[in-house]
Image 1 (tube, rainbow, N blue to C red):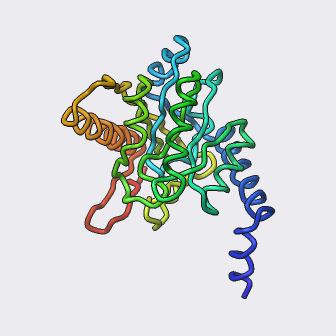
Image 2: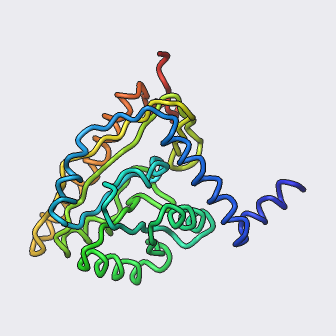
Length: 240
């Protein structure tokens, strides 16, 4: 009964705000207590210095540290889905000062995609999880790559890993770093393609973007001593 009432409360506006506030507090504590190791962040710092908008893409299961992945001066919006979990992310992002674009491939996608293009053309950057909101995990949906092609905004793949951390059994294998952990943030070289690219060239670009996301996740995991066991479908942390 208590579980039922709790789930019902979380679907309400006050419940989502409460959860979002707790999430934001935890992210803030992570930033204050964890040792953060960053690789290749100069790629986004350089884009910021050029005042060039970009698309920061990360797999859904690694989005927990999102507020601290952009250079401080970057004006950016997050793209989130219109369901209860998405609204929690929306409220948490708002606490950190980020505006949001609401929509996904399953609901409000066309409107959200148009807003993404408008935002990029106005000089703002985007944060997006291209395998969200429901997966399949690690499979790129074309929206982020197409927004990059149509606006000229480069796509930068990023990933976060940590040790110690909790890996959930959700579809995205969501990772939650523990307080006082070591957090590893890895950025990939920016990717871009000409607006006039052929269909074949676009398909190659989509694959390059997906490969980049997998590459930085793997490199961040290796730095953290985390290994994904495909047979058991779980993440394993090596003993330190």
